[in-house]
Length: 214
Image (cartoon, rainbow, N blue to C red; front, side):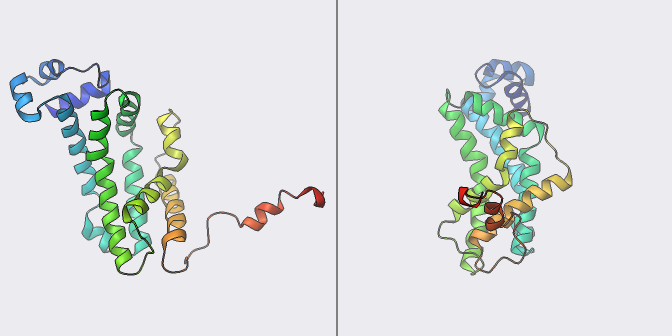
């Protein structure tokens, strides 16, 4: 039933999908659907929760803990980007952006069961590293939000708008590495071990001389 509902939501959108449509496609009954999920909002949240469970499996704590800090963040970043930029994930994102303002329950379910859980998992990991002295973080949840925003950067907006998405291993790794470098430059308790990825400020300013120099 969940698979049938997910297919219809992506094909028709949230508003135009009825529970009757889900029952027709899945072969179940309305009584069974209501008993299991309570409402269309409950069904949608169950779908998002199932998707987020699949995502969280990729960020299992033992695997992250076995890596150095920058390697773990790189691994998290690559897997996160690979998932949110895949065609189906982008379709879900577009649907929620288009209809979330009309259906607050839809938006809340997505944030609670999807991105919220991934961000919480990352916040737990960052908080543990802050307590061990490797990171300078007062609010792990806020720091997790910063890292996820760095990962998405300009690539997510372009993908949602229909730009071709390069999901090659090299492109994903490069995007994640940029995010890790900037994040650790701001939050690491130790000096950065790698050169910064951006050009020095002085060199950038030199390329735009003041009027007095012209």
